[in-house]
Image (cartoon, rainbow, N blue to C red):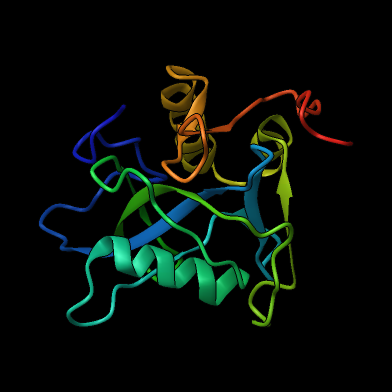
Length: 177
């Protein structure tokens, strides 16, 4: 697993002395191992993320943002594992986002914000193709690599403790489809 202090690179290098604005988000997998991606109104395909509210931990912010932006309730079975990306947004702010691998029982997002008119759970290989930003593709690759160490994202709610993660998108034997 890559610890949060390992940076995944940035769209542009940080400006000298610029303070980074913190954020938090979720790389959310459903019970079939598909990953949640959202289609931003600007055309970009991204993961749900946002700013923490006062008194909120980064994990609490990530789970809240997933629910607000995608209408999906998620959990983070391994909150001690996180990844960090950095970038400069279009307003020129330096952002530092802490990401958590999350799980949900939801079958589809329930989108209610005009900012995100579309979204879906996609097989990881399709999500990698669809994600707009290199930082997001690198993040998903690292989360998948970490999950691949055990073949799955750890889920203490499942009988064997895992949720399958397969890049091909092929059904698992226990799936009907």
